Length: 395
Image (cartoon, rainbow, N blue to C red):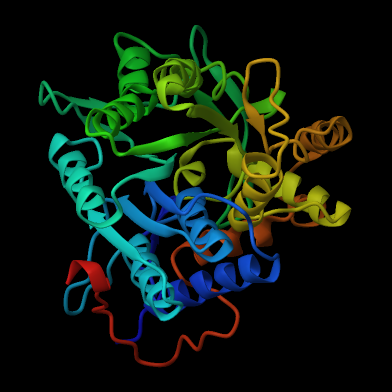
């Protein structure tokens, strides 16, 4: 079939297998071009099929020749209906990892569940024995608690008062004002339950219990802080409360891992176009301005560049450069004073008429469609493709 992008709001309802594979190939080639990283050799990535999780799996495999197990929750294709981009990404990753002689197996299911944790535990026991790096990169709006069965839903809301600011519809370029009502009832608690550190700790406890963490094992979860302009709705809002919990959990896990000389870190990463960030009002406008400035400065990074730098300079480079709260800051180039000052200046003047000039709305839009395998250089979208693609280890 010929697959075209079909969008609804900040969601793309279709994805392209060839475009997704080309995206994966491009990331693999980037990692290979940067040289070897003396990193972990047996890696578990939880949330491995898109964004930072996929970049982590690619960097581990093709930067350090690591065996990788990836966990994710994605929809396979059926005849006439494309699968999710994460499914196509994983199929492409496994294909190229196996071609390179690397171990790569994947488990598709609800990572919050006890069943999937048990499945991963058994796979590590059978194939790897132990792992020395665990990446936690889940981004889900909903979590069914594994012990109670209760379903929790996260919300993106400020805490305390209404938040009003500019946003942009990146499909049309229309800049408008948006108001978001504050959290109420159990909004904060629910969001922390979904996006905080409880599940990360459950994963680490499950692995520790079965002695599946190697001596000196490290675990890393990803977070975001962001600028002043998004602070009321993001870092000081419901999601920020969840991130605070995630970051606090790192210290608890680190204490648990002392017995094996291991450690736990939170890496604060740069603002990037992801399926999750596209859903957050204000963020598309901020990223459009950020991309313009960082591209002009020659400091722009995508997911793969961020993670390559995280691995080569911080995790395995001898200098974690932790901030005052014990976090790895790989958002350092984004948060430079001069970059943020320029964004604040442009923000005041941003309109529907001038955004294409003062920002990089096209770059934002292109990266959004790239997530789903569209608008990828070198792909002929007029050619029929087979939408049914299998992941080798999940046949």
